[in-house]
Length: 444
Image 1 (cartoon, one colour):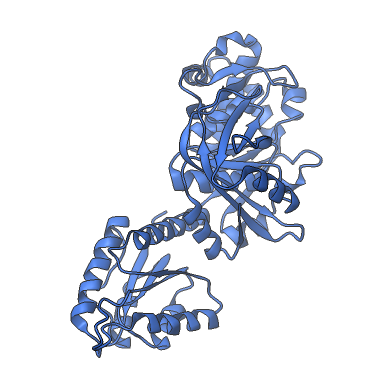
Image 2 (cartoon, one colour):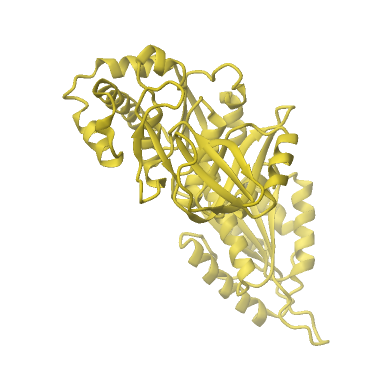
């Protein structure tokens, strides 16, 4: 879906227009470097008439309102009257303080605009500073990426396959909530539908899927041949359904159905979907899959989905693990993504590996508190160069904050037992997204 942002530099002609023009041109250069498709006016919008003329030409998903000089609340009111999209409010730093005239008075304009935004009940992201400042560049880049993610969410078809197991209801989603809060469409089918599809495929129909999997997973031939063939059948059933229905993310039931009713786990299928750019969680954790989608969209890389299973106070680390669903591309190069059997059920194939090192990672979770209100978990860290910690797939994260405090506070705050590790520092972007969605952020 095409993303449209608009730069709206408002002001009045009674200030120092040479300074304003210089800031206007530098601001356009910055915004175009971040997103070359940003719509910009040919000149500063120094009257309501010029503002309205420009607004007539755009249909934005995001607006960057900058007080290029002071402007009263009537300017931002015109923007809010026309558009319901998120807003970034940008104040310019006063260029010169020399005891003479006030050049821009952008900050007072920001107070006028913010007062009006609050009156309209509209959340907004606020940035202060000149376009040459790195922190300004970083904040605006993060806000635009968050707005792009918000747009992507409105085009997301999220597939929920089967029901959560007993005691895992925290991952169960309602289509009305997914639509109203995130803008995404939630589709639901029973796991037996894909199992039945898989059972109907001939050996010839699954050959290309078998070959593809063998190119991703080491030692696949070491697994029972019938299980490998049945895994390829599941791979085709999932991949075809995703493609035919335009699915962007998946939460799938796994145990006990696929062990009992089908005889082969779905773990490795979900791992390959993650590699193919379709975030896929197990245990039907739909909000986990939504969190994975956010992480992948912002980093361009598959995310790790798993349980926090171990803490090492001396190393300041938390280990995340799951039975074997991590994307093959996350595996350490010395081992690759190896095939194995499920740690409890002793049936394969699952994935077996430790994740490779990553200089910056973000631990995140879109979840709910005890009253059912959405909230966002965020913590930053580094994925260490560690071997596989337990049967299945694992990643060891050295947290920026105190790992012991993170674990104790997260438990006391009642967070769900599934988390996502995104390969990059996306804390700014996720905070900006949460602000757009009016979701409270918990940073650990």
